[in-house]
Length: 192
Image (cartoon, rainbow, N blue to C red; front, side, top):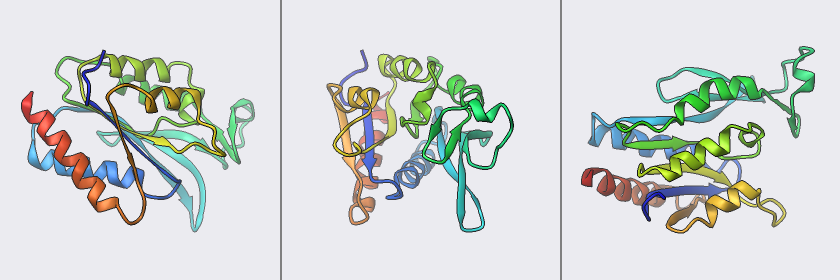
């Protein structure tokens, strides 16, 4: 089991800045500990003009692939699962994200942005998240807030995990939460 206090979860409504916060914490940690070995991924919007047309999954080394799209209209994409208007490209997601979640002894920190409905269409994803949690390596992840009072079962497992620290992000507390997570992770990583 992951040691208590090594699972940091950022939650909040869509668009509040969870990904931005995680990237800012990551940037600050890399500045403070230049040889930090970090694995994982984040997601970002794909836009055409003012319209959001999908999401990409991006490895921390910059490689990217499709997570979901409204513009891919191939015959294959018609069989992909949907979340709202987006078709989720499970194969593309898995080819990039799953290797990033392989536990390696030299890894200092895992970043998973996000553990959400689109990512959970992958049958390999949540078991990989559980492997990360089962290691002794700190994890910084984002999770969605419950929708209509209902939580995604896998997200509820993370949220209710003993020792998990949950930060609920809002426009007014972003800087404070960023500093708090950064300071806690810095202290934890410097003990290694």
